[in-house]
Length: 587
Image 1 (cartoon, rainbow, N blue to C red):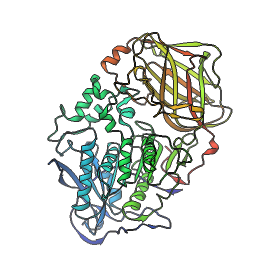
Image 2: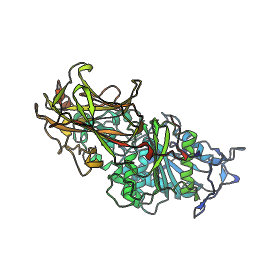
Image 3: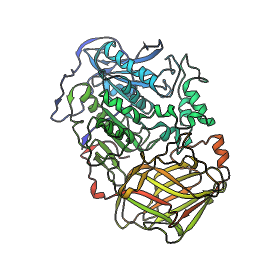
């Protein structure tokens, strides 16, 4: 299989010069007959620390690493493109420039900056945002115009935080920038709904990240913008809702500016990531922005796409395999194409979405997301059944939030599938339920039960009852108008009271997946009144939410009048063929 690559962000600086020349970058890309990653040609210099002053006087600390002569260790003559990464973790997670060694050895300068308010950088720490993007844009300009040895072309590299902040920099650089390409790996799309809250309930995610960030000399952890956000989330303040602050951090909303600035992006995430398939929203928004379509609308099979915006989703946890050979090679190919002017062919594709199909254990290249509009509804029924047909008679199940776990879950399982199917996208569980309390927390876990009884989790989701308001204009629907991705505003204004004893509809969004379900396996959904131990994220309800949820008993209805149902995107396995490209390890 053809090999490709990716990597995590880092940086460094060096000194010394020898008469060895860098491989040049042509002004016009020329198509390589068969691009292959070049062997390591150079050594890496010792990181050199310097600083760059921002427009507001704040000093940002940077480290730079140069290509060297491997025989003498002296810096190589000539100019090289620059890769920049913006790191908030200091050296606590290792030398931030180490991840760049692979690229330095192949003719790049690698620069790692300490994010404003962290490490040796001045200023106050914030949770991404416009100021961090402006810092990134000024660092790009410095790397192109001032940094010794730079050929004037810059790329962005990095994983996780170091991946996400690339989007903000790319949006801030303007339309005639030295920034030529980015590789935001281990990235996310919508901070509020993906990571900082789930189903309208806050998580400890931002607070946890803050604990790992070494604060800079001018930062006050009690008052900096990030700490204020954490406090508001915990107490039920404005930032515990999807307010204007969080909307300004929605990466999808940056895509029109990123596309207008002409910055190509190759993103990556894992099906087992912090937020599984976190870059899929980025892919959709970038493609839609490029073709002037509604940003968050699904991409159908008949719509055009561009190879300038590509995404990889592998069978990985957060950051797994990013520094492995395959993903490093893919990123090198991306950077060589856009920064060195080598027409590697990576952008010449009509299928720029690269998905690992679980169970089938194959990579699939596609353009549409979700790949197929096909949808199937399974109705919850008596006897713990999950059936394509509505129950003829009404029935109920009970969830007791205060009871032991055995009384806190309802399990519904289908008959064995008569033919194989592919779960190819996000799902919805619509539950009709009444509560004895003034608030509801309903979570759902989607499983596949193998013929031998093995249960394998596929997706999960949760919803706070008072945040059940549905936005049809942002929701996704499959064939026959079947709801597949319910979109909830999660704002303070969109809250609706939960009236005790009143049966109410709740639409729970389940995470996306791409997996083949063999014939003979069964589909299962487990409904709980608290998130189970294997839920993809920890939840921390605000004090008011906790008080309103206390001791709630829920009655789940199913039947002809109130048909609680699971809506799944299911396609034929014949629709998907193995990619000729190896986009990364299968585990």
